[in-house]
Amino acid sequence: QSVLTQPPSVSAAAGQKVTISCAGSTSNIGDNSVSWYQQLPGTAPKLLMYDNFKRPSGIPDRFSGSKSGTSATLDITGLQTGDEADYYCGTWDSSLRGMLFGGGTKVTVL
Amino acid sequence: QFRLQESGPGLVKSSETLSLTCAVSGGSISNYYWGWVRQAPGKGLEWIGYISNSGSTNYNPSLKSRVTILRDTSKNQFSLTVSSVTAADTALYYCARVGVLKISNKWFDAWGQGTLVTVSS
Image (cartoon, rainbow over all chains, first blue to last red; front, side, top):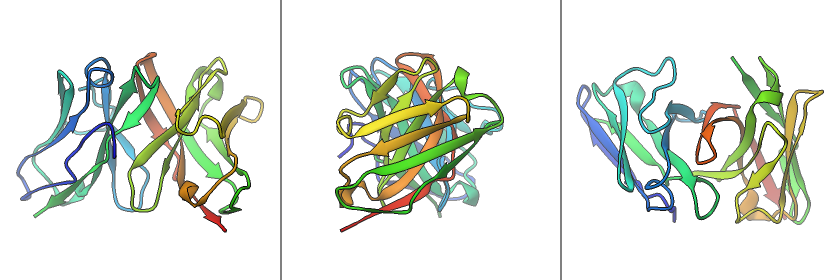
């Protein structure tokens, strides 16, 4: 069981919005920045977001991140079939002095 | 743009040592942090550890006693060894570049394609 808690799955119709949550604690999300990764089926993870809300070059603005207290959120608007993937949050844990990932959320486009 | 490529045996016997190498192209490894992440079949991501631009290392506490990450700047590559492996170490192993703003703000911004390592009894 992961220290960072994500819902196992979320779904929405094409064109709609999904929100993926990542719940942690004061020693990780509460104190540190969050990153998000997209893993398409059979491929390596890809960085979607870092420093809570910053998008790397090439990531469309349909993807947005935020953080409040000990939780973080990734929003995907204008959902496309190509967005079907597993999404992971990540952060630093000050107590463990190491990096953590959430358990992952599978996004399905209905 | 950095490219990363993992290499190493796909099959390791239980109790032996797993050794992987990550070859980096597109830039020098000297100025960056580099790490390893693994993913057991059908499971999520697990951070293994990283090596900094100064050569210092940081490992997942759950693996620390068995893991070593080294770098070879002359070959522009870094490596992972995991000793005393068991079936629980069977996973897809990814090497990745670590983006760093400060000690508590890190992320993985470039990934290799991954290499599957199976531990056999």
